[in-house]
Structures are given as C-alpha cells and as structure tokens.
Image 1 (cartoon, rainbow over the protein chains, first blue to last red):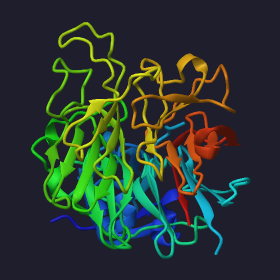
Image 2: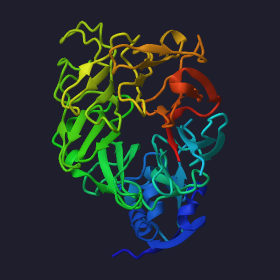
Image 3: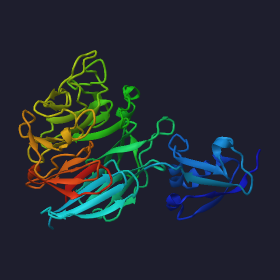
Image 4: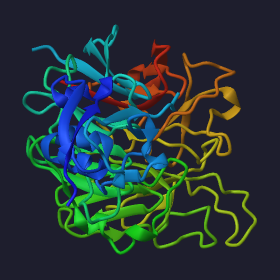
Length: 95
Length: 370
C-alpha cells in the first residue's frame, strides 16, 4: 500500500472564499484523485467548484502537479510525493 | 409603506438590481452581484419579507444560487445549488428558471440539461423532480443553440406547465409527480414531421394568474417558406391555448414575424399580450427598427408599440426572459437587450424610455412591486 504524501494545494483567488480565505491547504494524499476525495470530504464547496456532480474536473479548470498539467502526467492517477504542490487554476477563456 | 418597484437585471457579467418609487421616474442601480458571472434567471418573491433569487452560472466553477433578503442590497450564496444525483451521468450546465412555490421558502428550478429541481428551504437543498427529469422522452430531447434548457415553469395549483428547448411543452396535473407532452398544435420547423409529439423548440410560455386556462406561447417560428418534407409551417411561432395547454392554435397573423423569444401577459387583463418579433434568420429587430407588439384581444389582432424606441440601425435581440411587466394599476413593461440597454414602456408600452444604456448583454429581466 502506498504511503500518503504531505502535499500543498494552492487555491486561486476566486475560490478562497470556499476555504475561509486560505490561499493554500496542506493535506495527505497518495495521488491526485485522493486530493479531490479529501477536498470533497473537508471542503465540499471548494470541491463543487472544481468538479461537477459526475466527479469530472470542470472543463475550464486546470490542475497542475508542480509545473505539469495533469493531462501530461497520469491524470487523476498521478502519484504524489511529499513536498509536491497541486495548483488549481481557471483556464484562460471567456470574454 | 409606499410601494417600491424592484427590477432585477440578469446580465452576462452579473446581476443588477434597480429600485424605484411607484412613480417609476428614476431607478437607482445596485450591483453587479456575482460580478463577472452570467445570470440567466432571477425571481423576486414579494411575499412576507421579500426575497430575490438569482442563478449565477459560472463557466469555470459551476452553478450557484444567490439570495437577497434586503431587496438586492446584498446577496449570499444559498448552501447548495441543484445537482444531478452522482450516478445519473448528467452534470448541471446552467440554471434557466426559478419559480416560487406555494410555501414561502419553496422554490422550483429549471436547468440545463433539461431537468426540474425542487427546494423546500429557500434553495439551501435541492431534490431532482424525477417525473420530468427522468421522463421517457428526456434522453430523446436535443439541445438547440442555447442548450437543452428548461426555461419556463408556470404553476396553477396542481397543474404545472414546463417549457423546454428543445423538448416542447409538458404538463403535470398532479403537482409535478407525472408529466405528459402536451403539444397538440405546436409546430416544429426543424423536423420533417411538422407537428411531432414532442421536441418542439418552445421559447416561452405565459399566462394571467386569474385565467389559468388561457396560455400564450412564443414558439420557434420562421418556417413559412420551408419547401422541404412536411411543407411550410406559417404562424407556428405565436400560439394560444384555451384548455390549460392541451391544444394550441396560431395567433401570429398580423405580426411582422412569428419568431421571437419572450411573451408577456398584462397583469390585469388576460386578453392583453405582448411579443417582441425578430427576424428569424438573424434574431434581430426587423429592419433594424425595434418594436413591441401588443394584442388586446387575445391575439386576434396586433398593434405596434414604438414611441420612444429607435427608428433605425438597431439590431439587438431580446432574449426569452428579457421582458417583464409590473403589476401597478397602469403597468409598465421592461425589456433588456443583448446590447445592454434596459427599456421601460410606460402606460402599457405606449411610451418607451431607456433606463440604462450600457449594461452588459442582458439575459433576463424580472420586476416586482414590493
């Protein structure tokens, strides 16, 4: 069984009100999917803003592990190691 | 306490709330609330302590419902927004309609993809209404350009009328437990069958609260010159029912176009109805000259109302929820445009003035007297 890593999640400005104003969260998780599960459990409003009700990451949300987009890693199954950062960023789009 | 007019203006960049005395001479504008985020539906519930609800449809972070208990000076998110059950497979894409229920905190909500939700606690929790959301037809409906949206909820005791684009008109007679497609006489221009059982692109349905058997529908018109299978379908865009929506007939004769989005009924006379005809191909004002058209005899004849409106070079669209009427003795109409103008039509639309000229593109306009 994989050991959970201590990682930091960076929260973009528009979503900080879902976390009592926090810009970053520290949590333990083995992979990116486990990060989302933990956020759903502890920060449901934040989770709803990142994922839709099917559990899919919203179309205009990008998740980065350190500097790499999740799609260039192993998606939600990307493993995490202690010290990793998970960055939540809204996509560049709109008008 | 003197009556106030509260005007909610849902735009591409948030909700604005304008307030006036009953003279309607000057409106003070508050907002935007939910700044930068599209608002497709609003509801002013004047019962008891008035509440304003609005959908905040964030393409990035999902859907929210906003609520104000101080007439639009401040808004808070409700504790949750409608959401499909996890195993349903559908995900909420937009909130298109909010309607008050019988109880003070009871709400109904129509969403995209087309489904209905119910709340008993002022929007803090929601339950999907299975009778329509899981209807046998639901997986056969298909989206139009605006998405597959449930945009109209009209209630009359145990009767509930729903307007779905593109799904048609559905009627419940048991308080929303079960629904049946009720589209006899409602045409569709985009299918070989001119009068299918369901699948019409209904744009809006309206009625007078004291004449619930009489309904008016703005349907997707503009098919008079179609020469393909099924033949031309003139006049299918503006319709009337006199049997609680069981059957419909055209009342489009006399209008410059049967295409449009909103339809509004006078608050004191069920025979008076307003539409905003648009050119069907461009969805803009015919000839660049905007006009609201009024019938005073249930759609048998129509008169153009243009005093104060631009005479030329105006090519905006009025969207399906972009027009409303207040309930004062001499009611005023209000419409918002995709070019961000908010117009008031005083004395039932006889005289038009532009209240706000440079708002973001307007999706919905809802007015109430509180």
